Amino acid sequence: REILIPGGQHYRSVDATVEGDHSNAAFFGALNVLGGDVIVDGLREDSLQGDRVWKQHMDALVEGSPTISLADCPDLGPVLMAVAAAKQGAVFTDAARLKIKESDRGAAMAEELAAFGVSVNISENGNIIRIPGGMLRAPNRVLNGHNDHRIVMSLAVLCTSTGGAITDAPLAGLEGKYAMVGLFEKGYGDLRFIATHKPLRHHIISVKNLRFHKFLPVR
Image (cartoon, rainbow, N blue to C red; front, side, top):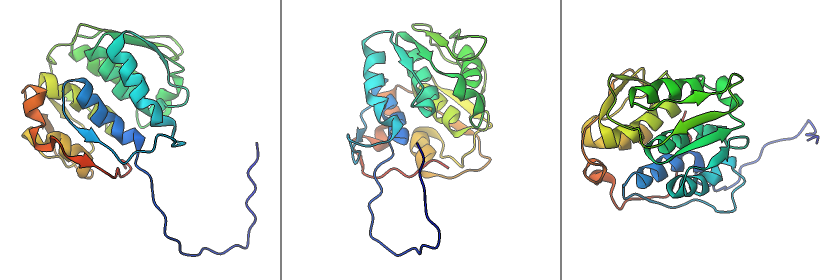
């Protein structure tokens, strides 16, 4: 398929509505899967975004141990891996593209999930990732964000249940019970992110019942 754009054109101003970002919404959805109470709206069900499938995959992870293709939604890989580790496990296929993101996201998540006691198996070509369920515990070391915002946010979701600390995190975050809000509202920086060791229902009390109408792209 070819898309041809003729030259010599001129921009003109228009009023436009930018739809909500399903990619970011997945992290709030993950909080709910782990026992949170966050209302997410402002998302179009008929969106053309590949990551619109996040809820379908989250539901599958709650119901069992599914096989999930990441072919059209590679950016969901880290958070789905995190949820799989917290629930009943999963097999991820078409995962080779995770190697060419801000970090090698499959390997990065495998390394960090090992700190939670979860042994991840990645095929030699990186295309298949197997994650067992029922092994998650508090991390035995400070976690590494691999300077990748999606790794940081995925680990932060788990830390709201287990506690933990993340370094090499590209954000200027808030500490304590406002940490997850800080992940989505703050920019990049050098501050160390700390997740408090509290049950999730208490940990995110500051965002309970808020409605998120807009999602800005994660830089």
